[in-house]
Image: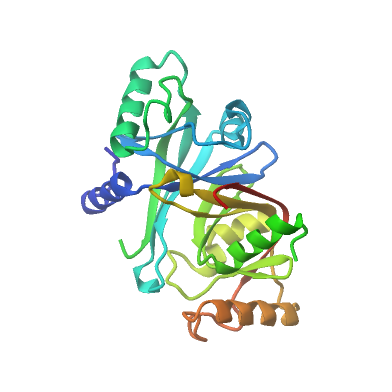
Length: 148
Length: 148
C-alpha cells in the first residue's frame, strides 16, 4: 500500500480506487510535456494503465505517451474533480516513475489486466487484449489539495 | 482566432470557450513533468490562466507551475470529458509556449482578467486580484481525438 500517514493514505487510496479517469503527463527528451486522459487501476503500490483498443490517432508503438516513457521515465498523474462550487475542488497529484511492462512480466501483466477489467466493465477482451502494452507507475511522491 | 481548418477550428473554439476546467502540464529543467487542474479563458489566439486566490499549498512564487514555466516554456493543456460510454470520449490537446505576463503588459493583463471574470462568476475581485500572476499560452499545435 502507499506509504503515507494513515488517515490521508486511506482517503487517497479510496480516491484512487474510485476515480474513473486520470490525466497522465509525460515529457520527451526535449522537455516538451504531453498529457492525455487515461483509465487506470491501483494495485498495491503501483498504478497500471493499458494501451487499450479505444481508437487511437496513431499506431500504438507511435503513441506519444509510450515514446515519452521509454525516453524519460518521470511522469505525473493527476486525479481531480471540477465543481462550480470552488469550495469542493480537490486534486491528488502523483509523481513517480513509469515503465512499460516487458513481455517477460507475465504474472504482473496478468494481474494488472485482471484489475483493469474488474474496475472497468468496458474492458472486454476485445477492448483490452491480453498482450496490450501496460504502463506501470510507481509513485514516489503523492500530494493532495483541496476538499479531500 | 486559432488557425485551423474551418469546421474543426469552430468546434474546438466552442469547446475551449465552454470548457470549465483544463489540465496544465509543465516540466522542470530535470524533465520532471507536473500537472494541475486550471481555469482558463480563450481570448483570440491565446489562452490565459490566472494564479487566483484559491488556497494554495505554497506561496504563489513557489508554485511549481510558475517555476516550471519560467524555466521551460513548453506546456501542454488538455481539455477532455470522461464518460462511462466510451463512444462519447473526447479530448483536445493543446501544445504551445507559455509565459507569465509581465507587470508592463497592463492592457493584456486587464483583458485577460476581464475575460476570466466574465467566464467564471466565482472570480470576485477577492478571488482574482488585479495584480494576479497571469499565464499566457500561445498554442502551436492543437490535436483532438474522439467524439468531437
